[in-house]
Length: 155
Ligand SMILES: [Cu+2]
Image (cartoon, rainbow, N blue to C red; front, top):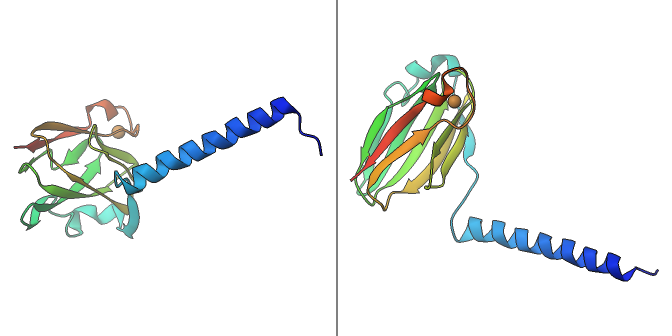
């Protein structure tokens, strides 16, 4: 079978791009530790405010430098609206929605997950830079979507 020279060049370029993209994904997963947010824990979305630990959302210390943060997303706010995290701490965020699909994103940290009613999203981050981090909803959830935010204070 004869393959035209230009066709061979474009096949090589296409194959090289696949190899480069696979290398980026592998590097992000292995070196940077990016993983898809877990969607393994379920919750009744109509009973979020009665279901522990989401009946009392907030930050819990689990060990030195280890925290768990439980968040409830609902139109158009996050509860808690603000948490204080000691510098250098690793925080695992557990987020659920009491109504519609929301987003949960802290720009420049890699914290970014969808929040689907009926499920608990989980994502972790170690805060190594002090400052006020803005936590935003990045899934359009209704007329007040742009107002939906919270703060993570790291000091
Ligand atoms: Cu939204």
